Amino acid sequence: MLQFLLKRLLNGVLVLIGVALVVFGIFQVLPGDPVAMMVGQRADASTKLAIQREYGLDKSLPAQLGHYMNDLSPLSFHEDTEHNQKKYGYLPLLTFGKEAFVLKWPYLRRSFQSDRAVSDILAEGLVGTLWLAISAIVIASVLGIAMGVFSALKRGTWIDHALVTGSVIGISAPSFVAGTLIAYVFAWLLHDWTGLYLTGSLYETDPFTGRHLALQNLILPAITLGIRPLAVIVQLTRGSMLEVMNQDFIRTARAKGLSEKAVVVHHALRNALNPVVTAISGWMASLMAGAFFVEYIFGWKGLGAITVEAVFARDYPVVMGATLVVAVIFVFVNVLVDLVYAWIDPRIKVG
Image (cartoon, one colour):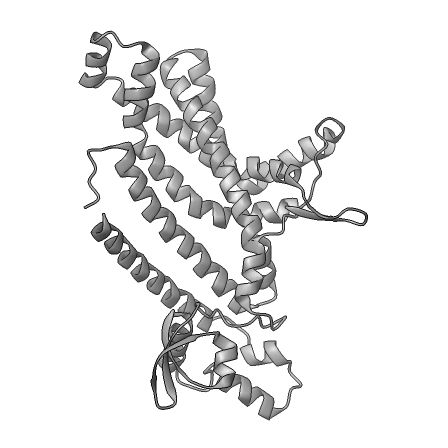
């Protein structure tokens, strides 16, 4: 188990390094002067030069890449000064004259627009996006597996055809189209019945009661975000169940006198879940990205809304940081899913 975890974590680190390299390369070719974005066009030459030195922008492109990767690495080398201690918040492990080998949180730099730490900006939005993505995948998983099993058990009936047709429509419908229709119907036309609003966030501020949790605002965006993975899970579960139900061990279980419920739940479903778990793990990271449009439609304050605003403002450190955060979540989810595989199917070994 330990060897497996270490191997997967090493693969994950290599993936993150690759993502960081790609992100750095992409933003090198985008238009705009980073220094001018931070201090304005009218700043004096000395201020611009100080900013260039701070971010290594006065160096060659390979040196800038090295500087950027050193900022991202939890274990890195920095000049041991009071300014750097405040900037990075590191813990010195070894010192070599003026240089120190330190342990720190990855430094995502500062926003061009607000001069706030990118990590602080993303942390505020990440909470809302995680609530949205997790709620969407839970809805999609529970309903998708149940509907897929039901469709497989009712194969060839009108119920099966209706569920398959609905799943095809769900896969085909873009999130922004589904979101617009759902917002219009349930938050506008049927507002008196549903009590739901077109826009809203996880937390709201009332002038009398103060800041409070508003979970009702989560319902429509979570359903919108979960439609496509729900449709995929329905079809995967149905197909996998139909394949498993024809296996010899299912006939053996029935021959032993087990009830149909026991056969389906304890034998067929457990063996049919592997491709479904794969889909769920893949969709978790995809939902983090797909949430961008949904958050925009419903006015949900999350990582997606922050990133979209940063793109329009050319606030590149925020966009780069958001991309890396999604990559970290993707790696973590994949490691977690591999462990779940071993629990679902004992035939899979993690060693």
